[in-house]
Amino acid sequence: MVGQISIDNAVKKFTSVDGEEIVALNGINLDIRPGEFISLIGPSGCGKSTLLRLIAGLDFPNSGVLTLDGKQIKKPDCERGFMFQNHTLLPWLNIYDNIAFGLKARKIYKEKKNEVDEYIELVGLKGFEKSYPHQLSGGMCQRASLARALVGHPKVLLLDEPLGALDAFTRMNIQDEILRIREEHNMTMIMVTHDVDEAIYLSDRVVVMSARPAKIEKIVDIELPRPRARSNPEFLRYRAEVLKMLNYGGEIREVEYYL
Image (cartoon, rainbow, N blue to C red):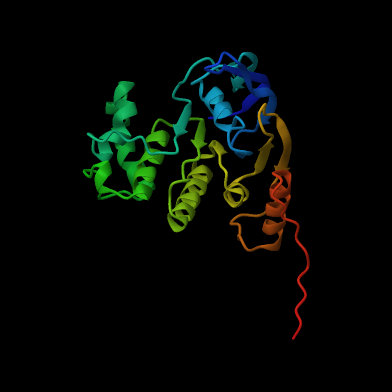
């Protein structure tokens, strides 16, 4: 498994209901190394999710080329798993069958059957296999979605704000689960997020995008050892740097105390 993504001058345009041409992505160039964790962050509506969909093969650029391990991306396939903001589990299937669904659709369930149980245990859902989505919490459903995305052994996992609807503690727990799985499987991961702290906590690099028509403003290398402490002064400095790029201030000053 390799998982190297190359994006060469990708342009994506849409036509509005009024017939106006809207440029969503304006010449995106980005190389993502195998096993790297990349976060895409920028103003709402700037094209982050559009770029993720191009990498997934769910949409296509008007110009430019995207490749995975040197092969042009032309359609969705099992080499790229996708985890959406909402869990998108099928409500009429139990957790086991939801996770096994892709294997059955590809007609490889018989030889991969044991892996369904492995991934259920990996995401901490052992004992809930026969439960239905409506019987579980939002965090547990997202864990099931993560297992479903991983069971096909993708080279790349794409995450489109998958934790945005969760409470803070559940979100932090699943962040750690994602990092643990990435470490075990050396998987390339690309995530769209609006949460600057989440981006810094998870990422090797944070890609800061401009308002539409989107381009890459800057790529921030997060040179912090793992596990990362969110209260670490260097963590806070990265946070201030990214917030400043997004025009939200964030300057850090030394605090003086008077007794």
